[in-house]
Amino acid sequence: MNILTLPNEGRGSFRVEYQGIPIDRMIVDFMEKESIPGMTLAIVQAPYIPRIVGYGVSNAQTGQLASAKTIWPAAQISQAFNAVAVMQLFERGRLKLESPVSQWLDSLPQAWRAITVFELLQHASGIADYRDSAGFDPQKMYEPAELVKMVAKTPLAFEPGTDVKLSATNFLLLAQIVEKAAGQSYHDFVTENQIRYLGLRRTMFREDFPKLDNEKITPENTRHSLFTKEGRFIDPAEPAAGTRLIPDGLVATSPFLSGTLKGFADIWASAEDISTWDIALAGSILIEKPENRALIYKPTVLASGKVVPAMAGWQFQHHRGLMDIKGTVPGYSAFLSRFTDPNELVCVTLMCNREGVDLSNLARRIASAFGKKLASGVDDELFYTQESVFDVAESVLRLRGALKKMGIPVFATFDHGKNAEEAGMSMAPAVVTVFGSPSVGTKLMQANPAICLELPLKIAVWEDAEGSVWVTAPRLDLVAGRYQMQSHPIIPDMQKLLEKLVGIAANLY
Image: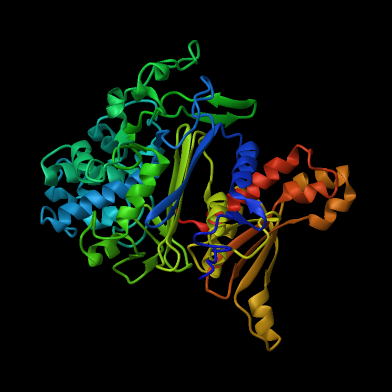
């Protein structure tokens, strides 16, 4: 008789925790810290989706629950749907990636006319983002021509094809090109060739909401009752309601008019559907040829030969096969990471109803519960860490640039790799930047002089043995506890600053 052995960790293990902390606790602690009403997590271990969990409420006013079926804005993940649509038309011979936008769209500014479809995909056009226009109101619906007009007179940020900068205008133009090449609306082409094709019953555009067969729940009528009479009302798929955080607390946002962000952030979906669609990206189901998938799932190579670790909204870290796409829209935040190496095949989807939330660190810790090689290797309870898409030198430059822009002085830089070399030793690059504002730090030291041991602030950028580059800062809220200062009002603001700086140093978008 053969005795069966069950997996103790990694794929197939029922112990889903990282550094002794279960996934549920990670999420609950994060939601409490960030004042997030509701969230859905979905985990892929391809071809399976073994974990889909809702936490909290999808609507803080009515008490509707976040569930596996809750429909959230996919935010900037929507770009990836647009990119698939473009590549499907390319494979069908309906458009050429090198064709100029002027072949498809009329009445464009002269400076835009030679920009290619592929440069739009790369975010390498230099076209301004209409969201940055003084006249743009995210709570107003616009026609595409109105959005184009907002930025038509703005000079290009750079010569097309020479650099990369995220712009919603790029993907608005792509959505219009899809319509011209397909001979049908963008909504219909994406619905037919991705949503309906994959059987994604809870993926849609906002204009499809009237088709949802849900009981009407309002702040005045918060109790579901129809599920006791008709089976179709059991376990409803309800759109989430958004929130934002202001100094006084959490407030509801106006309904998100996602159609305004056409082709860029207009998809709504459940976390489960995003995971199903994510698995379909891996092979020939949506884009047939591997060389065509490689065009949008690998770093951008500009005409100059410069490699930019991003493409079509996706970012590419140094961890082998890792890519992510994320963003925030009024009321909501969303994140998708894909560990595509055949030995890993783990994907994390997080969707929540609070705007302005960076889910990167939480998602990486969750992924690490499914394989030690996916982890940073540092104590994530003590440090806030993100993997950078850049090398150490570029990450440090981005950090210092952000500090300069914020008017925060840099007091010292310690280049441990260089110091090791001068000592006749070798080590991977590691740089610590020391910075701070005396007017802020002094207030902490006035409250408890001993905390001077932790000041000024520090952020480390370092490369591990596998070539991944990490940006790491201390978790000041935990550090402050050692000095009985965890309730000091300055600490949360300083922690937010550190996390923001880590994100800037580590990410292109």
